[in-house]
Length: 198
Picture 1 (cartoon, rainbow, N blue to C red):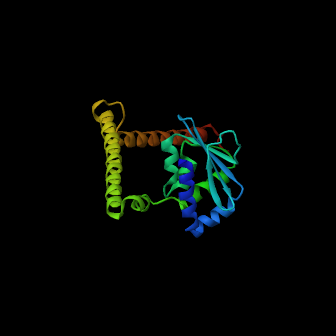
Picture 2 (picture 1 turned 60 degrees about the vertical axis):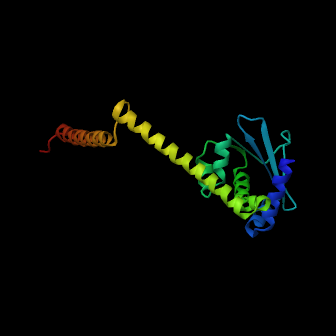
Picture 3 (picture 1 turned 135 degrees about the vertical axis):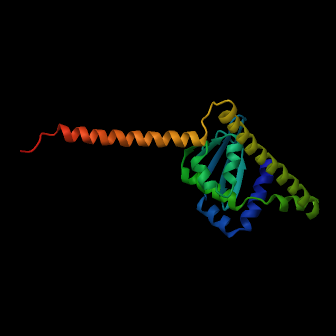
């Protein structure tokens, strides 16, 4: 039931986007399976007559299979998703071009949260809900960055488990100086080892 509603939403957005229609046409007859690690969930997306079909038919084969944690899979929907697909910890089996094609289609047909909420609760309430969600996610991002920075500073300054940037730069500079000195010494020894011309 939920997958049918999601497919209906995606198909409505595909119909409203020329880019999404072109992408769907290019994926005609192709399929992508998405396996969410840690959950007994495998969703199969396919394109038939320009329409997105979603099912949980785990036994059906797909042209490509993408596996990852819920967060790593969600990270593939953003604006720089194509880069993330190549660098994220998700696993792709099968045709990677098909996986990228479905990723682009999903991005082009991705529902706007505020617009979808406004259909059910009105514009003002939808705006307030989206602002709360943005505030919470922004706070979470800021909290994660602050936490990482604080832990890094503690490990560098208090615990002395990590070297500081200045100490690392100084070490690397000294390594470069020693390497250059060793190269000069090696060249000098090679010159001295050559027989003198008479």
